[in-house]
Image 1 (cartoon, rainbow, N blue to C red):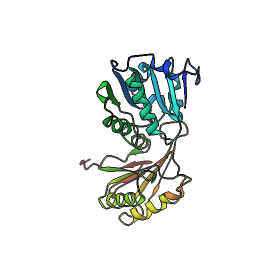
Image 2 (tube, rainbow, N blue to C red):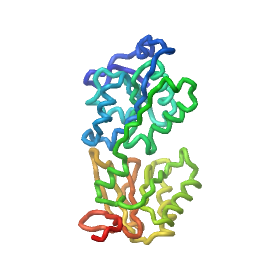
Image 3 (spheres, one colour):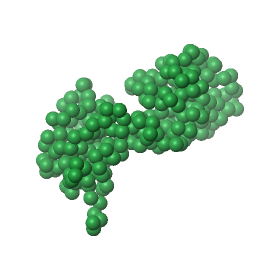
Image 4 (cartoon, rainbow, N blue to C red):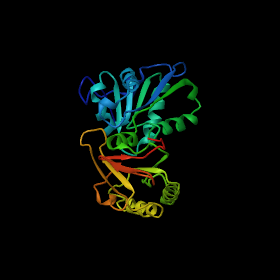
Amino acid sequence: MRTGSLKGEPTGKVIDRKEVQGGNDPGSCRGKIAVVGLGPGDPKYLTIRAQEVIEEADVIVGYKTYMDLIKPLLKQQVIEESGMRKEIQRGKRAIELALSGKKVAVISSGDPGIYGMAGVILGLLEQDVEKERIEVEVVPGVSAANAAAAVVGAPLMHDNAYISLSNLLTPWSVIEKRLDLASAGDFVITLYNPKSKGRPDLINKAQEIILKHRNPETPVAVVRNARREGESFVLTTLKDFTQEEIDMFTVVIIGNSQSYIADGRLITPRGYNI
């Protein structure tokens, strides 16, 4: 972790925690935590409210990669960044800072309520005896699913399910059950965290489960870096999509029984008489 004061640069002077806390009386201060969704990464898709909260914050807490996405907004704010799998530590630090009277922005990519930091912050606060001294705001953002869907057309026009293939926090047996039931229920399925170096085979297992209930020709969109630099997509089929380049920067959208491809777009009809 590092702390610093930014003036148009990604790094700044080292700030002691006492300086960050500003010597406020912890018994009388009322701080704030805003859990902010950054959207897909391109500043054009950052909401006005998210920008306001970031600019007004005393301290910004977040994963280093996400901090890089908001460099243009960083001026006098102190920043505290850390690596992957440090969500609990970031959440505890944000609460500590807010209890000292600071306005804290905790940043998440996409929407903070979809696999983001909102649940972490609220869960930690639930256990904190001083939670009444902290105001909390969850600032929504454009999710990865929404961004990917916009890239390829209108695949989420009907009922859909988000399923993460990461088994770091959820047992694979639970993920398998969710894939099976969502497929049987004819939901459009959006796969988050579809493939990593540590679990390269789970995407193939997911494909096998879904194929039990879906036509092999069901349309699928494979979208990388949706609405950020390096954006690309492929429209393919359920039987073939695992042959495409898929990684942690990819969102996979699997259509339902009514989804189709037309004019280079993936569409799931809602049922309107068009």
